Length: 373
Image (cartoon, rainbow, N blue to C red; front, side, top):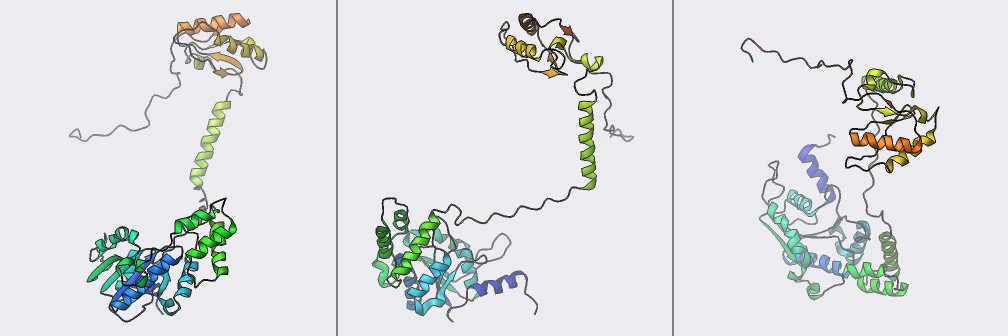
């Protein structure tokens, strides 16, 4: 058997998740994510009544939302609906990856051949879910029309003739709140849940749902999408790897080309403006403590507007490179205070490029044709 692909394959797959509930041309669909309390049973009852009154086929789809605000899983909700409405168990479905939202549910109803659809929701959801009417008969970005019904309406359950239309019904918020109330006893929590849930559920079933909800609400990981596994690191291109190793070797060689702490060439010294050091403070052959004392003394040297921290070191000697005459005087005063000894000045001019600096661009000059272009 050849597996259908493309739009045809998607249609067949969608139908597997929303089997037809009748042979009519009109459908009534309920949509919600409720906790499964009596208020949501009123909604399901309203869908059934509306469908019966208008000769339509009923559908009820439970969203797959779970989390701190939805601690009852879709499958558990589905079991509640089927127990409360045993004769209509076939109309209840849970959302799936292929049917994640109300829009996709309507696509499937359209593919089933329905010409008229009424969506029944809670009164507080009518405005929010009426957006689906904007897509009726309208092409999407790809030019496809997802569904086109002769009529598409979104109504509140209170607009149906269901006997429960005057019932307010419990709210999910107090049910969740009492589970997090540290002052509420086990009996108080159970009584709140018992009053909110349908009488068709036994006390043990209500207690089990309550305990599951309480545990999940305290679990910060509940409802979160599983973390995607990290992608395996692709092996580095051999040529790129070789070039990287060469660059690292050259950098290491450059840093250590003079044996780490040995002296540097005179032409390198000349490139550092006013570079100054005190050999007697060499950390290996002299007094490292004296270098430390020099740093302290610099903090108390004459305070000029251009004063900056001097914390540059090279080859074990304290390397100082003043940029102004004031900084020069600061160094002399600090060295004298700690007995720094003779001062060596490598250069007394601005930084100069060394003779071996490449001054030729590696980018070829643009060629021009005979017209100068």
